[in-house]
Image (cartoon, rainbow, N blue to C red):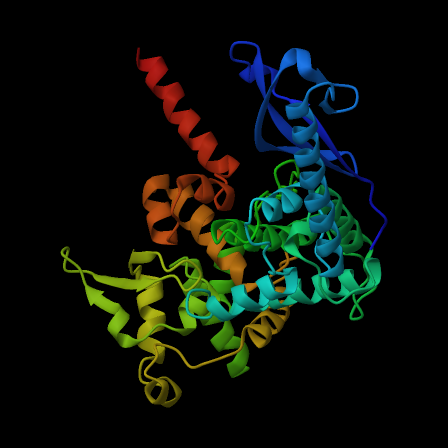
Length: 407
């Protein structure tokens, strides 16, 4: 632990003077940070030596007061020393709390992470929880390399710690590739740490939020999607290799439903229901957010459902589609993109963006309806996913021109 500067100085609270008498406070300073605590004593302004931080000793009662203040000083020095011996960070607030008889939290950063991950198993999806495990790994590496320790008390966290952790992430080169992390990856790790710190504050394991002055800066990217021509190219392509044909069908199904990979593979026959309009609907919940989703099934998607509903692999699993890993799915999509001469980065999530843009918004479906079908809590999220392309803007402006001409 680095050496700290520590001091106790007694001061009067001038904003609380009544009839020329002011309360006395102990000002605790550690490394230029300070806080004050009342010592439950008062004194007349004329009897106080502000330079020395003590009462003028020309009266017996003032000598007794100075003796009491010295006892307070010794208690605070002892509290400071105990914090260091117990490997707590001796912050002014920690010394104040010990003086007031409040317990100093023994919660450490690594204990907090373990507690969070253990108690989030039921509320977070496995994919999200895995990301927290990755963040935990980087925090442990950072503590070892920067602080030469395996853990650190929560009271030690401050702006400097966060800034150093951000720098560590930006400079770190993972063993599986040589390029440092991109900005948004760094910000995601810090965002997860921030969520855990917020939990510690709610549980009163930490008094001050170290993130108050820390700003996260995400880089905004345009969401990719397939144009109607590219989607048509994939739809009309028939593959002789069964695995490619199956992956193509799942991808097209997502293009016409907006469902993510995990939500597609978890669909069962029970999720297909007849709505009030006497048409088929997909009624399910998003795995990521648990938000309800109700999607009218378009003819293309219904055709794909009917194609695989009697597949033995689907029947055994009681699912709409045979199971396939996301890794294999995205790998095969790269082959499909090459065969269909599509230069975009074909991932399964591209289908979700395509549904939002090319299939729905471009064809005049209101953004409120699209947001509901995507399972978003806020329309602003849909606006990030679904960028109305120039064709739709051009068509809308053409209609406006016609209306203006008629006037």
